Length: 333
Image (tube, rainbow, N blue to C red; front, side, top):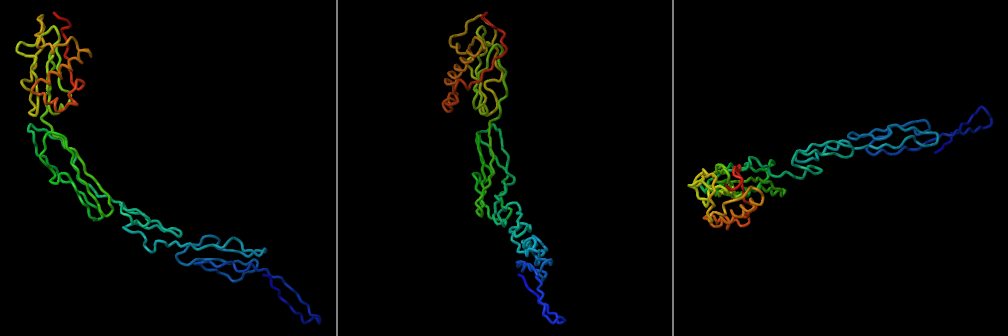
């Protein structure tokens, strides 16, 4: 706004009016949560700004009244920087001041703007590793240390398990122990799971007979082995051996009737007709396939036929194991 100053000179009998133009930029504006320092708003003068405690000045600290009646720069603002003063972070979170805002750094197990959300599932400690046991007895007692399932923030945890006594009497087979911990406070769960394997004593290896083949079950071998000796055409088994004999090893970990197998010895005699199923020409795929089929037929006629009745989906030629020895007789003598 412009203003005039009138000067009257008494020395001159004629009154002389001198008008001087003064330029003003007007009030520079109100600083919220701050202070304006300076009251002269005319050309060439300047004012400064400052903020209340807990606030930070952002923008021009000083403004000057220019000849075009406009203040230099722009009105600054006071930004609140003591944002953590109200302790907004919960559950042990740490607060970081910002400009008109704050950030909460949450401890492990909590999240949210104010660390208000519990995302900690139950803790599982001392969960057993997988257990494997062998025994000649069909049933064996197995126990393990109970796992520890808890909440580090002392909230209630409900534990359920299929083995509440942390053990049981197991027969040969495969089992899974499960512990589940539920934290009702946030509905989260944690699990402790491990496998229990119970097997008979392992069967010792037996050698493939010379000039012959050892044909055995290739399924459920951890539980039993049932083997038959086949001889190559042009040989005969040891005199004291009957080719219809089945060699069996079960839970006791011993072979019956013996761990020693006969060899197939050179002979010009024709095999008895009843033993025809136990002879093969060579160990090529064609004759191996025939031996596997013969083995299944033999197995189904022995005292071990229940193995095929109980495990029909496994008792198949493709699951039979055939091991041929070094063949020294290549043709009938």
